Length: 169
Ligand code: MG
Image (cartoon, rainbow, N blue to C red; front, top):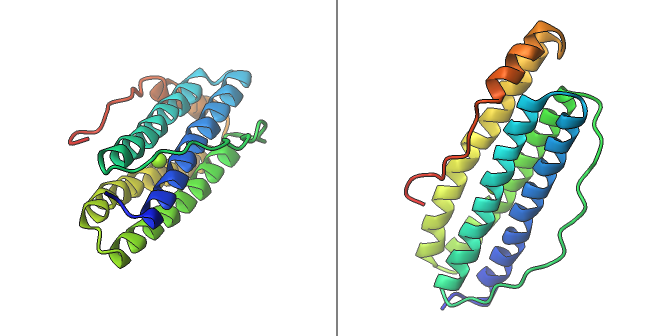
């Protein structure tokens, strides 16, 4: 059975992952409102990934004999200035999530819980990709100045993104 300290931080992380899902769904709605359906699709895939993360922690806590305690999900932001601002906030948010995950890994070390430590390796590796994706898109948006033909090309590219459940999950 998992110890109480880890049970608490994992419950908080379930909430953080579901808030991430909610935030990206709100960003998806924003992109729909400014006629960028490909960007909206990209964010909808992000929403699915975050739900998957939340569920992965949910299932893990139960498999370790822990008690899942769901909490209120914070209301996400609704409006943004432009696509660059959306992705800059995405990057900041993912850095915050990385810090939360690093903290869980530290608690797992302190509590000598190797199974949780191993789970956190998967999540922390995943964060490298999450932060990298956002950085890459910010750079591309800056290159094209966030408008014109370049936006149309990016929107078409983002329309093809699909959710693929990670292997070994
Ligand atoms: Mg996540």
